[in-house]
Each structure stands twice: as C-alpha cells, then as structure tokens.
Length: 182
Length: 261
Image (cartoon, rainbow over all chains, first blue to last red):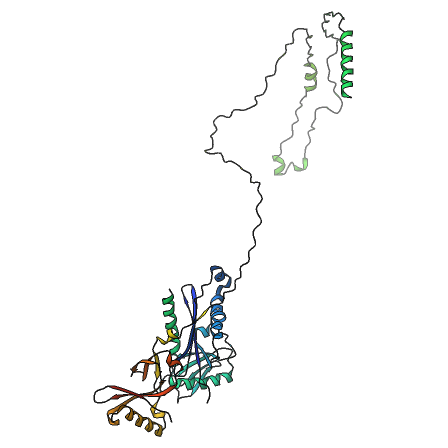
C-alpha cells in the first residue's frame, strides 16, 4: 500500500513589527497531522535598514520556512502556499513541489481530471463535476514532469477535501496564537 | 675673570677722575656768527638760439580759391607773443639773508608724548562678550564595534492543539461514483447500525473521518460537507467511511461507521 499523501500548507504573516509562520501538514481529507509555528521574530531597526526590501522574503523563506521544514520528519508530497507568496518569487526546494492553489472564476472543464494549461507554470484543474476549476501555480523550481506528478496528487486529495481551505485555517490559527501571546 | 676686569675698569676710572679733578674751568664768550655777503651777482637769463617764439607765415591755397570749401577756409593770422618768463625770473630773484644765530635765543621745547590709549567716543558696547576658549584635549579614537546583522534562528513550537481547535471541513464523497455493490453493502450496514428502515432514511453523505477523536460534527448541506471538531486522538486514528443520514419521519440525524471490504 502506498504511503498516504501529505500536504504541507505554509503561511507566514506579519503582525506589527514581528513575523511568524506556521506549517500545517494534513492528510488527503484535510485532517491535521502536524502543525508547527515559529515564535514571533522581531527584526531590530538596524537589521531592517541593512536588509531593506529583502528582509521580508528572507525572513519568510530562509528563516521561517526552512526552520519549520527542518522540524518535519518526512518531507511533504506537496508544499502549498498562498498565491501572493508564490508570485513574490518563491524559489522553493527541489525536494518537493512548491505550488499555490486558488479558486477560479473560469467555466468548468469537460470532466473531472481535465487540465487546461494557461502557462508553463500555471494551469486549471477540474476537481469536481460542474464546479469552477482550481487554478494551480507552480514555483519556478518545479519542472514539467514534477508538475504532472503533483497534478495527480492534487486530484486524489481534491476528491476528499477543499484544497484551498487548510491555508485559511493556518491563517486563523496564527492569528489566534498572536492574540494569545500578546 | 670678570671680577678682575671690573677691578681694572674701576682703577682706570678712579685714575681719570683724579687726573681731571684739579683742572680749572673757564667760560669763553662765543663769537657771534656773522654771515658775510661776498656780493654775489643776481642770476640772469640768457636767451639761446632755437628758443625763439614760433612764427607762422601766411600762405595761400590758390587751387582751392574757387571751390566752395575753399571759400570757407579762413586765412591764418599769426600773433606774435613773447615769453618773459626767463627775464622775470631773473629780475625777481630775491636773496634771502639768514639772521645770525645768537646765544641764549634757543629754547628747549619738550615734545608732548603721544597718548598711549585713544578713547573712543560714541561706541556701542556689545550686549555680551563671547569668551573664546581653547580646547586642547585631543579627541579620543572611536571604539570599533561589530554588529552581526544575521537574523537569529527562531524557535519552533508544536501547535497541533491550536489547529485542532478549528473545525475541519470534510468533503462528502460522490456516492454515484461508488461501485453499486459497495454502496449496497454500505446501505445494509447503515440499516443494521441504525435500526431504521431504509425507506425511512435519507443519506446525506459518505465521509471519511477518523475512527476516534471526533468530538463534534455539524452538517453543512449547502456545501455537502461536515464540519468536525477533532481531538488529538484523531490525528493517528485510522480513517473509516462514515455515513450520515436523516430519518425522514422526524428529521433526526443518524450516523454510523461502515466497514470497508
């Protein structure tokens, strides 16, 4: 029997002058298997000046994301983050495909499992009958073959769960943790 | 050495003093200074050739006589002038005779000293006089400090309980896509499990949920899903098909886990 698919949902948020991130690992039903979050990082004024515009991407990708991934015992099958983060130039890791999923307003494709490629790293995926297709965007590090494999896993998971919902849950959980700590 | 020279100088001075001490002093009336006139002739001016006054000769321009421009020309008239300067200078020379100096007429005049300070009048005093101070202490060399801009590593906290506090939506499976035999098997288990006639049951959905650790669940008919509240025991619990149904006569919700073949 094949190992169950693990989906990792990553989100990093800025609360005031602090940054914190969370990583939720779910099964294909969206049930949490693991959730870890970082302590809020507050860069000093000097660090903010020295890093400039690269501070936020560096913190999110190099510090928060890599720290959270180190804590995982097994790498996830898919690493899912928000479309805004991915559009910001997320480089990703070759160990697992990095992608973003987003609900679209496009008309439904012919049948479940159909894909429509809108770009080399952007495609529409029909998950449920008659519903609007899911928009999937891959990071630059994901080659076409890896994209195909990722689509198969997305289809399998999308049959049981809403693929976009867990990311909202991570955001809500981080907000609640910030409120609790403050 | 200097003592000997000093003694010698003192001896010489004493010798000179004694030598001239006995000399008589006589006063001699000075002879009055008389300036003698030797009859010097007054200076005279001697005209020299070449210094005659300029003379102009009248000339005519016959060629231009008839021309209109020529008529406009006036004849030049020369006027004889004389320069009497040399003669007048010689004639007016005056011999100044110096009066003889006489003794006792000179008086000593003391030159008053210049004032050392000049008093300025009408000046406006400044409201304050700034004091100029000189700082002689050298600046201390600056201390060199190094600040590592590297961001510190962050601590990771487990937060499974925080995420389990949020309800998890679980999508219902499409019953129509299930094999007919499998669905009949599931229906039979539902009737056995609930004890309700199959005609009195309305199936709301088939969901895969953990066998343990489900604290609460709520049906969301609009999206054909259930919202389950999980406990930590649910994380490692195996997933099993779960049928949610409604009893038609009273609308009560019924559910049961069904066995997979």
